[in-house]
Image (cartoon, rainbow over the protein chains, first blue to last red):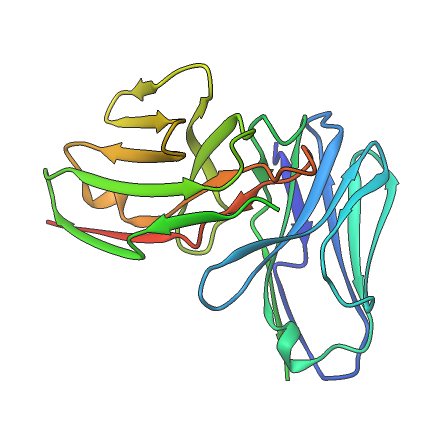
Length: 112
Length: 113
């Protein structure tokens, strides 16, 4: 069984489009995250949710909107996609920040 | 937020040699320091972590040391193998929140046969 699964794995889309990435975890964790990894491999936290409530919202454009329908899901919706949004987006989950975080396999977003 | 500095950015060693990656952090209140390994095309995976109440932790060929006074922690890999080639990240939770990790910029380790 996959612990943290995100879909799609690859996403190629045109500038200006709106797209969503889905994430689900079956580990029973309370906390879920979205990280962005740029072309230089730098991993940066975007959002953190604990028990469906937003805990961290880093300096991310408001075109990015996370949605947590329940503790096991944290989806990422992106409006008006820009070239600079091209990156690999990772979903992760953990009991809290002081325990192991389990990452999904990533979604490689390419905006053309 | 927590500032985590990681060095070196790239490291090349011969199979069988040791590899050491170092990180420093800024928040003296930080108490959890994990190391993640990311293989090509995959998400990061925890390989070892250490909490602030111990100075060293070992798991087979991997060890982590922590110096709280100097605010730095290091990853040591002994008897390196080609399958150790990957990007390694250190991390620490930020001061104002316990709900996420700030990652170092990563070290690309290459182990040559």
